[in-house]
Image 1 (cartoon, rainbow, N blue to C red):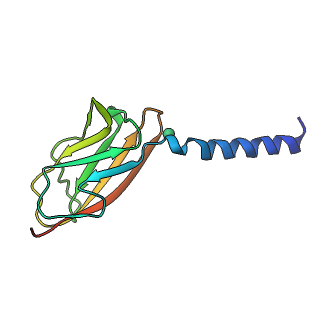
Image 2 (cartoon, protein in one colour):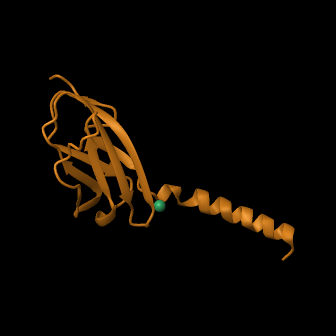
Image 3 (cartoon, rainbow, N blue to C red):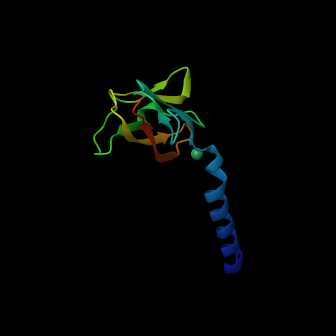
Length: 123
Ligand SMILES: [Cu+2]
């Protein structure tokens, strides 16, 4: 194989490996409380739904207040009957802004992560 052909093959391989698997990754589909939403009262539980099934041992979520203190009560759990749903209990939340950070390992072995805010209003 001459060097010009090799360069073309390598460029094509790079394109395929960076673009093709993206649709298969587990991204956040929606949550409750919803991304960016304001809820009137402290929710007992945070639900996150993903676009793909998750590996429970390597997927987690934390919820923190504006000082950075964790307000999730225990670790996240993945619903065995619906492995696209991750749930975490919450401590009682005073009015304020909260940050949700999630990390997901999907069943195709790809990891993704992200964060978003929601607010608890004054009721
Ligand atoms: Cu993937």
